[in-house]
Amino acid sequence: MSTPSADQTFRRADALARLESTTFDILVVGGGITGAGTALDAASRGFSTALVERDDFASGTSSKSSKLIHGGLRYLQQGDVRLVYEALHERKRLRRNAPHLVRVLPFMIPILTKDGVVSRKIARALGSAMWMYDLTGGWRIGRIHRRLRSKSAFAHLPTMDPRRLASAYLYYDAEADDARLTLTVARTAADHGAAVANYCAVTGIDSTGGTHTVRLRDTVTGREFSATAKVVINATGVWADDVRALDENVHPDTIRPAKGVHLTVPWEKVRNDIAVVIPVPKDRRSLFVVPWVPKGDGTYRYTYIGTTDTDYKGPVDDPQCTKDDIEYVLNALNASVTTNVTTDDVLGVWSGLRPLVKPDENAKSGRTADLSRRHKVSTSPTGVVTVTGGKLTTYREMAEDTVDEAQKILGTKKKCRTRSLSLRGATGKRWSSTDMDVHLDGRYGSDAAALKSLIAGDPSLADELVDGLPYLRCEAVYAVTHEMAGTLDDVLTRRTRSRLFDRRATRAAAPAVCDLIAPLLGWSEAEKAAQLAHFVDECAREDAAGLVTEAEFIAASK
Ligand SMILES: Cc1cc2nc3c(=O)[nH]c(=O)nc-3n(C[C@H](O)[C@H](O)[C@H](O)COP(=O)(O)OP(=O)(O)OC[C@H]3O[C@@H](n4cnc5c(N)ncnc54)[C@H](O)[C@@H]3O)c2cc1C
Image (tube, rainbow, N blue to C red; front, side):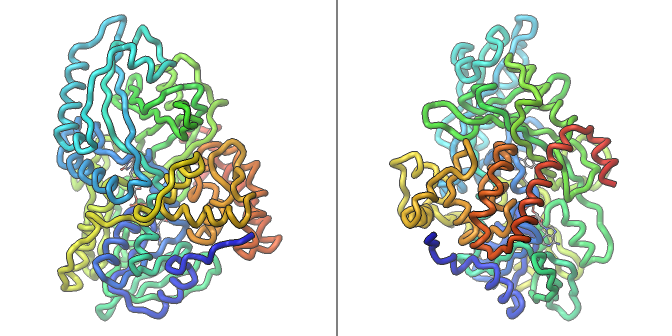
């Protein structure tokens, strides 16, 4: 197999060596979207920057979102106009800076009848919300909302009971593969000079003497070592309090994790050609029903449905989609469609935790759905900067605020450059003549050239990676040689999203994928077996969690 030489700026071994030998201006802890964005902001301003992630990039919340780049109509209805305005502004910037990764996604909100009657109050309220969304910045996408008659609305969701569908509103937002966006931001940070390493955990912070000494553990080898930095930025999401405790010696208890799950089902069961917002009976919430993986003929392979928003008391390292979650989502879906979607139709699930910031007062009451999605930047007495809260969509703005705060410690005033900074793959030659071109371009942009050269050297690398899924074998190779994938799970869950689409098919393909990447990672037969066993075990844990209630799952994790 001919492999292109690994990306010179994105090599874990080089980053680890630099971590040991350099005093950085800024060391960012946490390789989710917030940490990756912060590292890019810092590096592009010219600061010597490091980014360390204890697991894989985006392995926390940033691979488990609804994958929407949006303002969030819901937050407007909650009165958070500023959040929506800022998010819609960021949506525009991200579409410009990463046009290969961010796609426009039309949404429909059906207006339903109750006992044959349309509630004029609800229809009017929705109409006002639509205008508010457009005026707050929705128009920036180039299209404004419109009302659909029942026939057109039904054409977008033909599994709905047409007698209940009075009309609908159509509006526009955007979508992106969250894990790929995070990885691309981290790679762009490396392109701007940052030392970026996954599988490198922060285990201690010593702040005596002005400079921070950060204890690190290479979680692949177990080796402990130290790095030094003038400023440490804690961007560890739901783990932010744990990292603050390393610095402040007390656990500040500021984060209130809110769990959200999604289910993937075969598209045929729903047949929506655009995203649809459906109400949850007997709840104030609604769910997104999003078509996934276009086939090119107006149909899709999958639909995913989510998300829930529940207070979470379980282990933050391992949120799972339980029987309660699946029932909640399927009940809501089946109240809107007539095809009776059952647990047997669920092909994949994912479950993540929102790193919501507790309000100062009355912290333990109220629904998590009502807590603000705004972010917060704070600095500890020793000068460790922590950023929490926020959204995938607003990561760039969060990063700007955080590096501005870090500059107060550094005593500098360098201007933020990320507002119009292209992400990796956004510039250079792009292709779109074949289905394969469209697939690769939408994931790698101009970097698709490297994947095409792999296929030119070995045409078998254009074969399917997992039966029925859109990924190619060359993507697993590229994930290892260029994207710092170090485990089978990295390849099947985050570099590709195979496990989220179809867990059973992915598990069946896992041995062959393991054989493909093992030589590139220098795995022995024993290591191969361990990687495979770990992946199969993770899938089995997901299967098992879907059979127990939330209470049973939490009790079993104690
Ligand atoms: C169900 C759900 C749906 C969502 N949908 C959307 C959406 O559609 N659109 C949107 O804009 N937002 C959405 N969000 C919000 C968004 O996903 C999150 O705000 C965002 O991903 C949080 O990113 P983060 O980097 O702060 O946290 P994370 O992604 O969790 O990253 C933190 C990282 O820190 C690492 N870490 C922890 N401790 C250490 C240590 N000691 N050393 C080194 N590394 C460490 C972790 O391994 C982790 O990778 C959603 C959230 C959820 C839960």
